[in-house]
Amino acid sequence: MVGWAVSLKIRNASIVDAMWALTLPLPVAYYLLTTESSFTARNLILIAMAILWALRLGIHLAKRIYKHHPTEDPRYKSLREHWGDNANRNFIGIFLLNSSLVFLLSLPFYVASQNSNNTIETLESIGIIVYLIGITGEIISDKQLSDFLRNTPPGNVCQQGIWNYSRHPNYFFEAVIWIGIYIFCTASPGGIYTIHAPIIMILLLTKVSGIPPAEKSSLRSKGDAYRDYQKTTSAFVPWFKKHH
Image 1 (tube, rainbow, N blue to C red):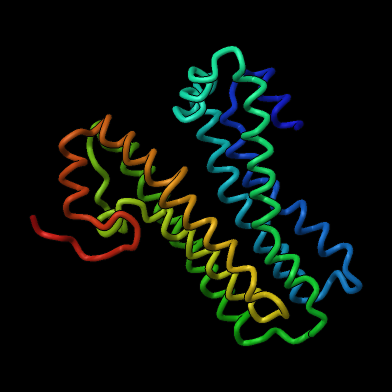
Image 2: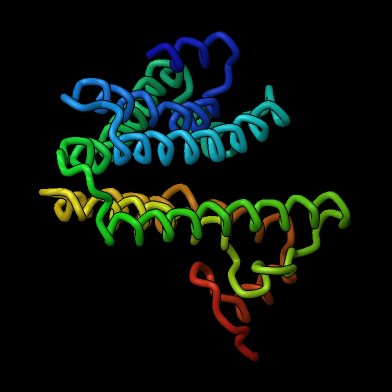
């Protein structure tokens, strides 16, 4: 609700994207501080994973929003035009939906925080490795894209590095992060039932707010060059080029 009030003042609902990422550590910290043993190795790893993910994605999104302000993200601009006079009121739903998603994504952390076993299990170690691969891949993908955009005229398609093998490697590695978190949490009782978290993230990335609007925007700005890229390059999972 605070975020929604700020968005009314600055007339930019795009801030919900950065807030969504930056607020994950809040429920995670609450879970850890309300357990009987807050500062176990497991709990410190959990809060570190939540904070690292939140800061990396949240700061990345906040920079993008600040750069384009006062222009809203095309998704929210379209909604504002569609809703007309009801836009400010209806945007409450967008902010509450995002806070609900934060809660759902925080549940694996809650389950793992209830684990009283002081030993870090093999599955947890594997989860940490997968998580770090995801974070590293996402950082590399974002840097490769920003370097390309900075040094190349508009209208060109980035096919450098990992972008040669996937049209959206940053989204792929985001999914890897949440698979790593899930693997970590399956070592705790009931953790296997938090499979909803990586599923939600993968569906958001591939079907809702990730790939579909990004593809539409790229087709609009890059035209045939991007259509050729679509024909030869995997949309999500990095893979070898197809010939056409």
